[in-house]
Length: 243
Image (cartoon, rainbow, N blue to C red; front, side):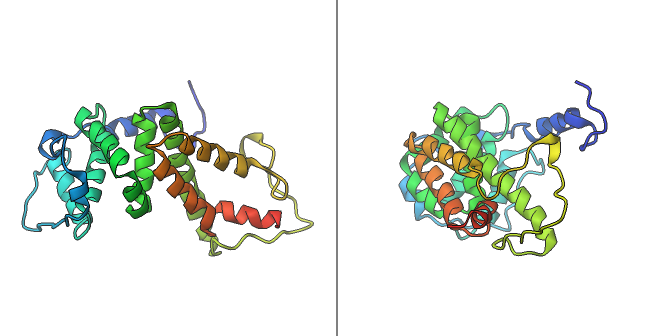
């Protein structure tokens, strides 16, 4: 498909080549993964100790180098979090190791509640993306993809909004008598005072999380953040609707 005057140089051809490079698998994943029956509960209290004197392989695509970088990120933190991040990093590549996939679902089946409450938001989003890519049920695939897209778009939208210097917990004031600029693609504008698109989006994601026991802790945690943090576009939309 030929697309002219593209926002991204090279259009989707260049984007797909970029994604292909990002998905080149790590070498030697078996050297960084624990046994399939590793005691996950014990890892919760095990502390990561980064060794600055350890020299990892030079190859950026070596799983041992990736583990070394993650050990530095999680230094002083939980070994369970480190394993979770490592498994996700391996699963981002294609083909993904089956052992990593099995460990990911063990982590969320056995330690889902703990992970949902203790992981940084960055890794909650990564977990949602992994459910979307490797989910075992329709709810996990749709719910994980939806949660990841929701948070990615909030991050993109609200990061761009910060250029204005306005705090993200403050909605814009209405300006009367000024022409309202059109939306992209010829879309009709969303009614800030009466629209229900935001409610439908969140309710559908909640239903998907509610209907899958393994996804549920992650979904409830992420959607709980959307419901309580006043600094996202969803909280600002509520200001236009009044009580």
